[in-house]
Image 1 (cartoon, rainbow, N blue to C red):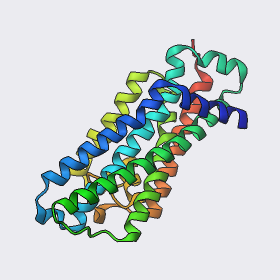
Image 2: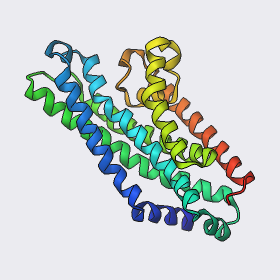
Image 3: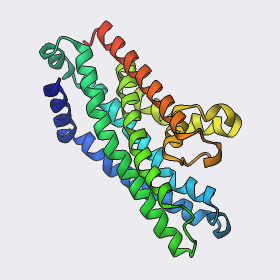
Image 4: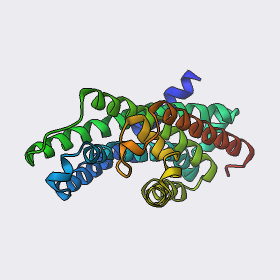
Length: 249
């Protein structure tokens, strides 16, 4: 298992698309945070809840790119046919999926931490330029960084499971983007009492902030963590079953 895990980490470090993901994520975090710091009025930005929505873009974008990392780890191999020699070397396919989930979670942890740290830095600098006092405490920043990193790691596991079920790279990537950026946002606007139990909002509960929902509407961090672990476990189990029972030719 250790050898499989190291092999998956090596694939992440040497695959061009995987190496580009952090760069795309950094660009998106900086863009959306600056747009919101400039777009909100000074009065609104003075509110802790509004500030958490701005800082929460690190949670949303980090979760998205971690999920994409997980999905690409399996769909990329299926697309290019390199999954066949992988399964020939390791006939027990569930071990391959487990290694991919572990490696993706490790990478997702790093992406989540980077996204949260960058969002915090850019938001704080932007608020200072506009003369707005940062209303977040040191504990809020710790929760953002730690919770955002763990949430992204679990989303990477979800992405790996979804990629194994869907198998089509474009379908998996588009599906994850649509869910996190469109569907959950729509649910928050129409049925917020239900939307807070969704996986994206659960990651927000863990981090204490997410861009589309006020902190007061999020679940308790422990409950959000539990729900996200359940979602990740279900996605991983579904992906393992799907990849074991279906042909990869």
